[in-house]
Amino acid sequence: MASLPPSDSPPHPTISITPLLTSLLSNHPVSPSEISATLSLSFQNALSPTQCASLLTLLASSKLDRDPLVLAQCASSMREAATPLNASELRAVIRERDLKEGTYRGGLVDIVGTGGDGHSVFNVSTSASILCSSLLLVAKHGNRASSSTSGSADLIQSLPFSPAPDIEATTAARLPKVYTRSNYAFLFAPRYHTGMRHVASIRKDLGFRTIFNLLGPLANPAHAHIEARIVGVASQDLLPVFAEALRQSKADKCLVVCGAENLDEISCAGVTHCKYVVKRPNPHFRGAGKEKEDDNSTTSDDEETEPRLRTQIESFELSPTDFGLGIHPLTSVSPGKQPRENAELLMKLLRNELAPDDPVLEFVLLNAAALFAVSGVCEAEGFPQQYGDGEAAAAVIKERGPGGLRWKEGVRRARWSIASGAALRALEAFVSCTRI
Image 1 (cartoon, helix red, strand yellow):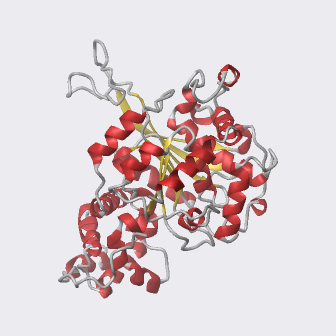
Image 2 (image 1 turned 180 degrees about the vertical axis):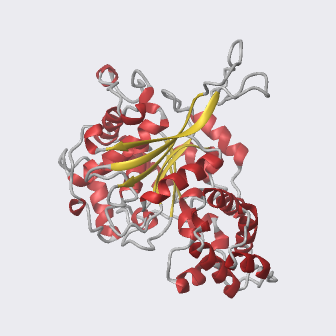
Image 3 (image 1 turned 120 degrees about the horizontal axis):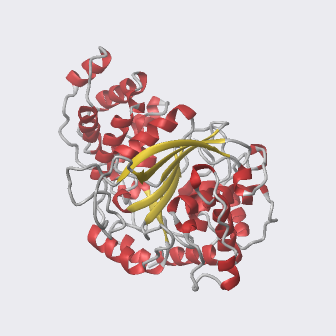
């Protein structure tokens, strides 16, 4: 099994950041670029433990760690410090797989949360990501548990396969090859963000959540290849922060969600507050002539004119009833159990052994359906022949709900992913990849 680099690597010469710390302490203006450049030194082990702890503390006390520009630029620095992917090879594989459907262009997708909501529910986002891999290319970025009983990595590693999946096997070098065999890949955060080991003990000693807890969902090393994502946040005040941070990161097709209970998932218990980062036609666009055929084109031929599409942030609320599903109290899907128990429940779900209205099943369906809808795959007017018969195509649900999306069609596809065995096959294919 692959192992992480040793933590006792030769010390890096430390750099003093006293001037920045003094400015933060005195409430003097500090730019996001200054903060991100300073934080990036921690990935190189170039900060003393004391000054690193001071930086994290001052960012939290000043609430600069909740500034969207700070988050966007720090996340960019974190991704730049990560083990680089072979971008050209990954793009080639995505193009070759050609999973385009509806307005989904065949790119990678992710569903992730900040954690820290205190609810310790079932591993819903990881389970939903597996269902979505039946039709989408999933790059699930995750780690072991820090504030819950079962993190995404714990769940994957506890799946009842023999031998067990090796969560460290999907390295940056091997990722393109994984996608030649499976729609699913789990990107184990410590395998990519090796510089984070330098701050692990500092974060533990501080004992409170720092900017790094917020950066995780924004630091997927495959960010440049991600077409659509759902990000759950653990408090409603973070909704506009993350939406703007994602917009600043040039992302679109993003749904930032927070349950009314301050749950970092789409809630099965009632209302979920949403910020939708999406490209819409620009009313100020005055381009003439035939538009470019490139699906990603957002400008006219005259680069000085307004762009054809503009990324904007929209607000709405979702309820399980928008998906045609029942409402279940959070007590029916929590407290989260140990990883092995959650893994066994996930396998029952994937084998279609749960009742159609089982609370855990409907909780997972909610979140999987949302990612299907946001990706654009639900905009297809039919169902690809390789995935279903004519009856399945005729059953497409065209009803639209909040945000103008086909949430019920997302549920239909999520249920199909289970009933057809497609989600389970995608997971099995990924597990097989981790053994090579």
